[in-house]
Length: 238
Image 1 (cartoon, rainbow, N blue to C red):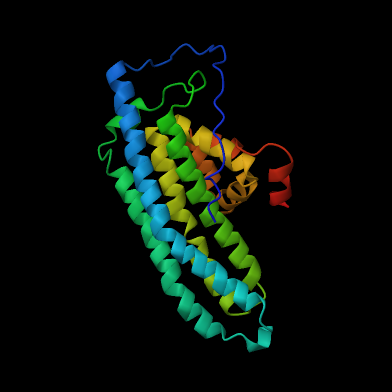
Image 2: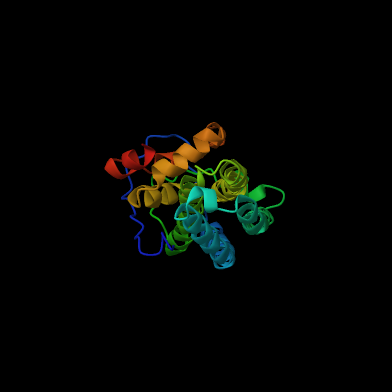
């Protein structure tokens, strides 16, 4: 299920910047930014270790239900079994968001994070954080999409579990937004990675369905939605 592990982050050469206001960071600020990336990456990696078992069981149970004749599926038992797993996975994501937000409780770092990343090559620390975010985003969104597809024909369990699984996207969005406000350029890397994996369209559709794409753009974080280019994303959007 580890969708982001084998993907290389592609750094881009610095284009000529035509904007007038570019914030240059001091060596001390750059070092602090690297440390922030490392600490966030550890939080994301810890979340991945915790959430993977729950996502795995959710996928397996929905797969089992999809292969069982519809009139033989105990829908109530399926809902009762998956509800606590989905709730625990959602709790993990909320705790992860809280941990990241707690790194800048007064928003001081966020105010400095809006420097121009178009002329910035990704550091090793940013790549590590972006890969973790890509894996978390890919695993959660894939689990949601595939599980909902497998149980969509179950008249009771399908809508109930689908609505519960949709709740996973809210804290996931909050995590992405929290990281983006502190380290704006990392979302560009995440968007590129998701696009390379063919997951940009899935994430974009989920965010759009919840109205969160507009919020991302209003926060100046719309780059996350631009990761998908070409065939893979287009196929996933269909």
